[in-house]
Length: 345
Image (cartoon, rainbow, N blue to C red):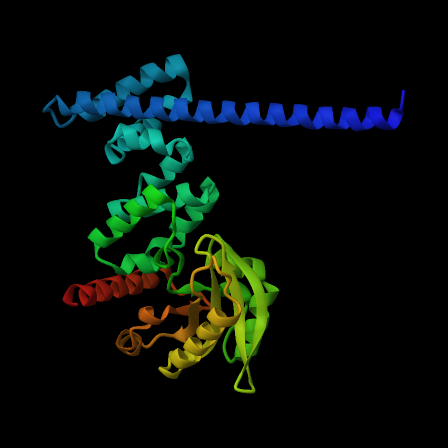
């Protein structure tokens, strides 16, 4: 018998068996997680029903304590009091069983534990849908929440009814929009730059830490080129960074600027976008979109220029993270300002 042929056949057999076993293990893990999560939801729902039917203020607390003691003695620490309270909150926050059933295909019980404390319903729905669509693990989800992704994403600046509509569309179609992808500000603390740096040193630092920069940009971004050369009327122009976003199906032109945003940046970016659309865009792609990253924004100039009509996003970048409380206040004020402006249009 030919030993070479035997080894090839054996190798193929092993690969096939490995694939079968791994697939079975994945199916078992999914089934176990789904069953466990639904059990926790039903436990929380049943306790809620019992508590709501009793008028006494102290009844709920007493019920959870006594029920927990019994369940722990029978089924273990999974039903400790704090976990039982999470199940009750789970059933309160995600009160539609059909929605829970659809989510457990992608989200585990630990995902839900991270989502439950988010008090704002729209914000919680944003993280739920983005987690489902982009396949975040629990660690990534917690990082996104701690990094205030929702408050930094362009969609948060819209009225709540429009946000709810876009999130419903995301749930129905699975298609991301630019307002779900781009954010403001971007955290570039990983570049290690302090004061008195140049645009080139910022670009060099980003490219040294390209993996971190792409993580901050978000899922779906792929680096294409640095200092993209464009010849227009015999003159050379250079775009700082060029990316491609797989889910948006479009090129993303990035310009890095020191100091405040200037109105002149719009014309420069429009020129780059139109060139990319004419010479680099593939037939099945959407028109290129621009991102101008500035150390500071000029809110009124940006609003007057109506940059969104030109496919241009402007955002601040932070090379040093400020106090989180101050940052939260700043983001809250920016959201309120933008929503008030949109309500007047």
